[in-house]
Image 1: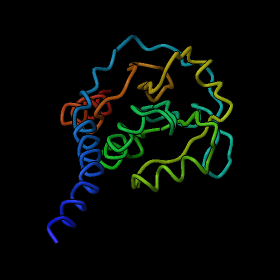
Image 2: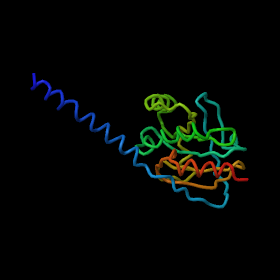
Image 3: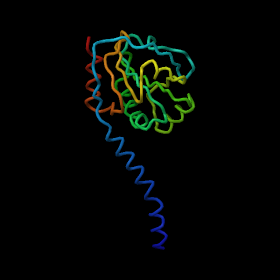
Image 4: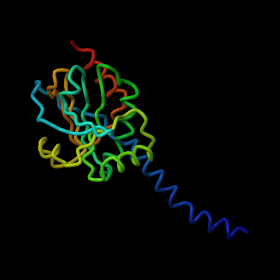
Length: 180
């Protein structure tokens, strides 16, 4: 009997260790240190909603948006996505929205499966299957995030993953949205 317990422990320990290390990694995401800048025009981006409706950034005019370029195959993107979901849950309104733009070639099915796997509840699905968003933004890698003001001008950016739901991040976005 003890030998069976030893075997069970040996078989179960590695998956638990891997899971624990992934949780620890997610908790190690840095606070976003967004590069703030004078308002500047954003490149033209065309993408679609989950329903297949074509849209552009102009469709979000009148509100602050945090545009996040990501893909399901991107490890850092996967790590930060739950924090973007929490940010949207906390601050999403008529004045602020997180817009996660997937450049995943797997399209809607891949994004829906990923959202379901990690229980994303508050984010919309936006797709740029052609990947031209990466070209238009001159991106060499993802994730990449852009803070866009209600006039549609970029006022901040960040390359890399971050904990978007940290206390300092929530405070930053509350101040940005409240500013005249």
